[in-house]
Image (cartoon, rainbow, N blue to C red; front, top):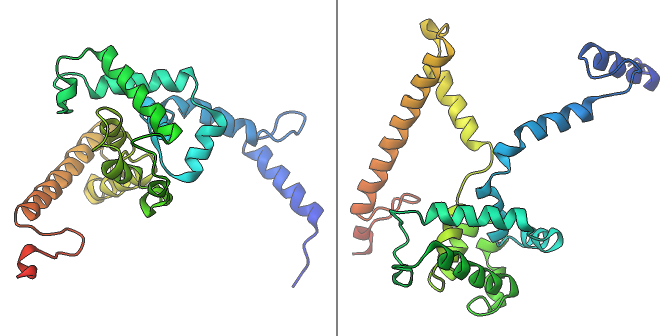
Length: 235
């Protein structure tokens, strides 16, 4: 097999970068600057208030260490307060009797009291073993909060179960792309962007609606969606 000179490889990479417009007039590689520019352009959409809230309330050990290292500053705390206000805006799904007739300022203040206990591991978060469970280690924070936070707090558990369960990865984008390929194909391959978007939204919404309906029907008859093991199997 013919050997390849490393200098030739480097020259080839430089030529490719020049063709792609990733180098400036002096030949300096601008790929890093391009990536940084794209990240800053999309950062407001990715680094949302809900993402900041989920970061602060995550119980995964690595994330807890990151929060402790970087600290939740004024930006993150203001983002958290905006999330609390949105989740408690009438009609509020939080059915806690302690919150009836309370102002938003009172609710936010109670949250910060509960959050301090959460970070300081003071009651009701004083049992260290709870932070070593499989849900905590594997990053299933919303399940952890459902077990050990929501029953013992008025605001924090309610908020944590919702913000920590949000999907922040690319899974939703991949599913949306899969639906798009089913909608736009064959004789419909030349559809315009507006029509394609509307059809994709309708198709995806219909699939989600059918799935929710099926799940509700299974719940009514006691079927577990994971293993299809129903109450009748216990007789």
